[in-house]
Amino acid sequence: MMRSLRVSLSQYLDIARVHTSSINDLHLDTLHERFLLTAGNDASIALFDTQRPVGLHGPHTARPLHVVQRGSPGSHSFGISSVRWYPRDSGLFVTGSMDHQVGVWDSESMQPVYMFDLSEKVFNVALSPCATHALIAVATRDSRVRLCDLATGGFTHTLSGHSGSVTSVDWSPAHEFLLATGGIDGVVRLWDIRRGSDSCLVLLDQHNTFSSTQRSSTGAGTNSATSHPLPGAPLPLQPYAQTASAVRLCSHYGPVVSVLFSPDCNSLVSSSRDNSVHVWDLSTSSHMPVHFSQLSVRAGAWHIGSCLSANGSLLYHPSGVNINMYEMQTGKLLTVLQAHFGSVTACIFRMRDQALFSASAEGLALVWTAGELPADMAHEEDQWSDDER
Image (cartoon, rainbow, N blue to C red; front, side):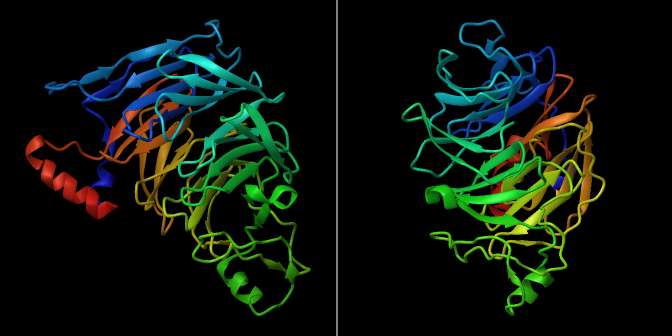
């Protein structure tokens, strides 16, 4: 933990500036954590190799291997809101755009191999890291969650339940059919996508705290959400027994801008334009009594890319022009990362060297490290990484 408190801008790796306006999202390939994609509000996509050249001991600037500009064949015509690598093959990646399109791209040619037309602005896309299926979950301005099938090039089905635009989606890292979504209605929902019209497992309610969960276990009240056991889960999700005096079910008092499963899939983190972060215990569907302070979510944001450390003990969350680093167990603000001049839009954690990549509205991607150790300390670094995980 103390090593992570020394997070600062990398002295050895910079990312060259490519985008002419905001970088809306970025993502590292999950196989090697080497290739970085950035997606811009100018409809451009850039691909970088973040590995330092062999034998280089000084600073290194990663320059793009490829750049797709607006107007290129098959490119998006409006800003790209979301970008994700295909988890099992770094030869493919997916983009979502304000031009209503979800693109599937070949990373070798940097050409789209297929475009899904969603007929609505796309805010976020997600691919399951553990699934046997090849479904893209898509959050759009529509109130329905759309599932696009990479294998067939068609839509499988939709998930209905939100009362407004869907802003965020995330697949469970342990259950291939479990999907979390957040919407402008302030609600976080969990879905088992196999169940058709009965797909919603539970609506997470911020008034369902640990103490109220204990009370509901006595049998008082009536169920306010349908809940089904999760195959393979250590404990089934439990519905909240809401009393008649309780307020309307909601996860946040403002639009949800992020949903994020913990690496062990025991909890879910959500955040909102109301400047709140909530942690949910997925075994009970309860809101954990953890308070995160001094968060400032960008006004008008549809989706913000927060991330967790490799073992889930730290939360990195964009907060205005800064990134707040919190201790997950207590919500304590450990440090504030300051270097961007525009609002931070997204960040992603790299497990192998404990590095953090961030993007912002001024069009810059930055690299942060928790202390870069010399080669003669490499063994200690490996030992620390094993302990951290």
